Length: 423
Image 1: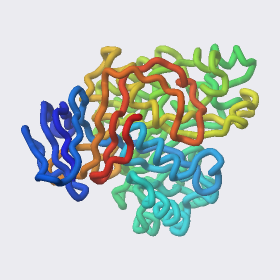
Image 2: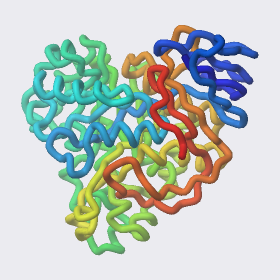
Image 3: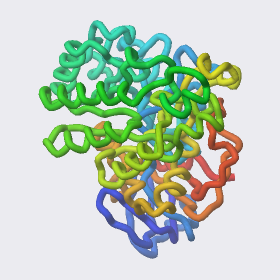
Image 4: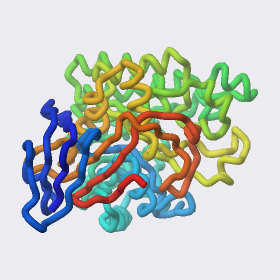
């Protein structure tokens, strides 16, 4: 039994907020009220004075690299990084080795996830071997526990395959997520074609690479009725395309990463491979459009695209180093610093984009605080100075190390158990 006392609670799902105590037992929230006490001699009391009590965060886009690339990260260390960052539920991407295109590999991943302190769910692939040609057995994988489908990391280029995948996903009532970068238009991925590519003397990735595939997939979603997620959106044009598609009543969702709402291609020039990612950091007008999309709900999810790499990999040249940065341990602080303290949105809206909305798209019982609801809870010190330095992740490939941010997770509770405590 656990009693959280004297905190300020925000439930973004219901809009309820105020000074409440919260009693937790056997993985559930038993009572939310004022002046609660523990039965004599039972449980632990947490004094949350000065802290914000919120639902555990939900990240629908993480790479834990297991199986196949465990020198970068594994499911255990990825889950520890998530807990430190306030995430109690994560959705794994399927570009592992072997990829998650069979029930056997999916079951391995889910079993490994079940041994951690948080809720680890997983997508399965859309196509066998991530080759973009033949669909995986989507019905079997859904029955085995896949919460959605994606070939994230490799764009799906065959429109016929995409259409059939969307039709099946719609029948299964599961989301299908898309990495929107047309390789035919890209010379060197991970760096924006513009000021950054000119600085490095390379071809880079033009904004049209994203825009063209977003246009195609929004059209197909309207045709098929599928629930789709436009992953890690990076251009102002793609944001507007999603906005207009949503007005037509499509089951469209989009996610933005903290690095895309915080940084521009200037960071790639400053930090080199530590700011190389797919899709690349774009221009200031794109960053502002992404923020505006998050504010008005066009972009309804913040997802980290947590992508660990070794220091040796990132030490390679700008064209040879892999794309991606870690993000689980800095996402909330970047949201508070850039979006809330920056005056763009309330903390309630930020929490909605990081918990309630992503949970809803994946049909997860998460992202809210209610009696008899899951005891997945975080306590946030919104005024704390937070400087990312040491990471629970195996990796440290991020440009945000040493930044002075505001907001830090003090306690993470998952299934009613304390799984992370600051210090």
